[in-house]
Length: 512
Image (cartoon, rainbow, N blue to C red; front, side, top):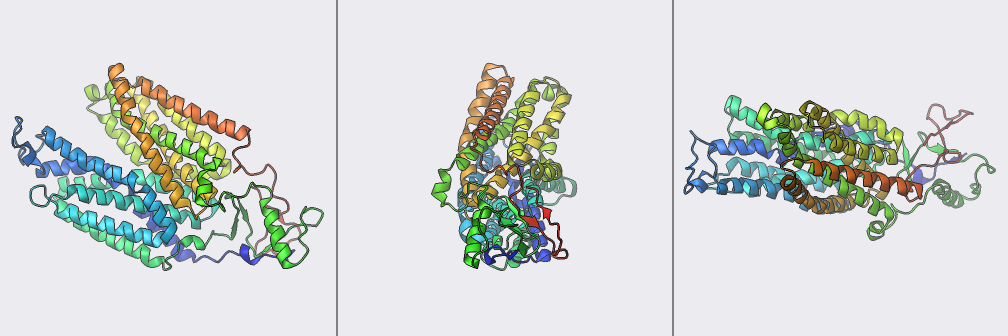
């Protein structure tokens, strides 16, 4: 038995403050990250206020007024569309800069920037007026930028938690992003039911933003990222994200016969051989490579393809769903009830967080990716069934697919590429995914124009993309290209010891 080398000693965590920070990061996800995608509720509020009614003054349909706020002309519709599209575009554009800021200056600085944008956006939304102070576009874009920076800051919290919780935490960040669309629905409800003005709502939200971000920034006292305090329960984090749990400050390397490397020399020799011992079961190098070398690795190319196709499939389903439901009679016979139900189901993706936290650590990276692909194929396949009650199940399957997709992608990037370049890798993948997502509109328009409103061709396209990703993963695994797979047997003679039972004669072998 040898003492654990200094480089393997993990600092103790302040569990109280760390748990509070993680809770606040998750709360910030549902409060700020994806709120711009709840634009439809804010648009209703602005319409009832008569915002941009002046654009319809020369329209033959007449001028909007408080007594008839629903009157819309082409110019007014276009202006509302510009606000929404501008904000959602900014979410994609700032993904890479947000990741670069996170890697360079840490979680605290990222939260400070996010807070500035969120507070500014809320304040401008409170005082904006289309006739006297038209800053709706700037304000909504600021909310989108602040949400993107907040999302990256929240992801960085995954570096500080144990493996079993990490998957669920990242899944929670992704699912709460979708759930955040409910914020503006609450705003609209308060306005309709209690007459709370837009000015009051956004001033209150600006105050909440100030308190939330100030609290998180204050608790993260160091300008460096929290990742310097590594993992709970004293984990060794290998170069490819596989962790060996050592709950004491000692490890056992077994006998000299069991260990192919000589660990009985000087402490320098022991340190060098221990490194060889731990890493000999993995093709080490991705986390320790520079950014450009990582970008040329198969690991990056593989996930870039899977992520880009996954984002396109997810957004393609959301984009084609209204037309799909209308082709099955939702608008004609049910007054768009199934469309509203889909929006509520999509916002409830957080119910799959326990499933992700249970399945992903148990099954591993590859099988989690394959389950994600299967869920996506199933969602598009069920979309072909022309019976609206079945589509309720389709909504659930798709929501599970989306929750798994973003959780797996983020966990993969963190564990495979490491904390040093996680922000850049994540931002680059999402930015490229946003470019690939431009194929969404042509695909939907093509299907709509050729099949009289039916979305069969889009469903088949979504299924084929899922089958391709499924086959690509299996081929890569069969060829041995997916080198993040854990070995079939435990790593050598690495054992787990507790502080209380350090003298156990029969150590417990760590399952990987």
